[in-house]
Image (tube, rainbow, N blue to C red; front, side, top):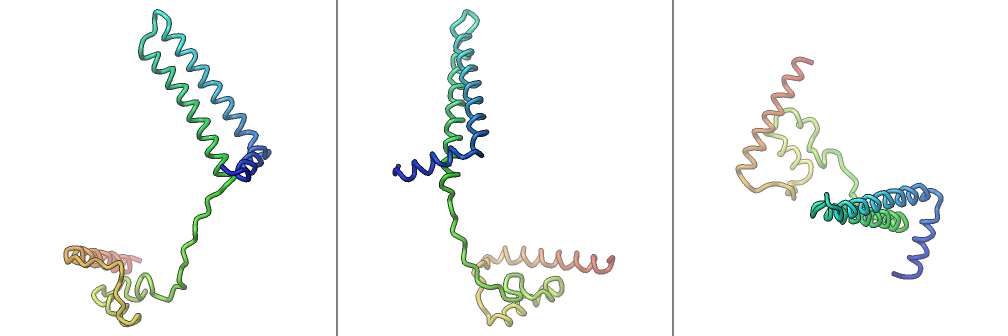
Length: 154
């Protein structure tokens, strides 16, 4: 780890907004450690056994996980990950959904209207499987029937 990185993490840890997190971490680690110690004592007594012995290590492991989580939150707050924003091309009318006038109308012509508007470009997301096309056509017919029913009742 570079010196500048450590300095920035320490500077973040000393921020006032981190004080409640530090206190909470210390309290939780203390409680989990005491529970582990108690479980250890029970495992050493005449009533205890292997289960109590393993529970003691489980409590201490959970305390270690709290410390690790606190460290990760501190480090991530000091060095936020900036995700690159995808470059989006400006959307043209009907680019993604096709022609809105044919979206709920006659579904058999929807592809033709979209192809004519955009110069017969191939859809990169199109599925070449004939079974999927039949399912898509059936689904589009179902949507058209629902749209017709909504127009009649509304």
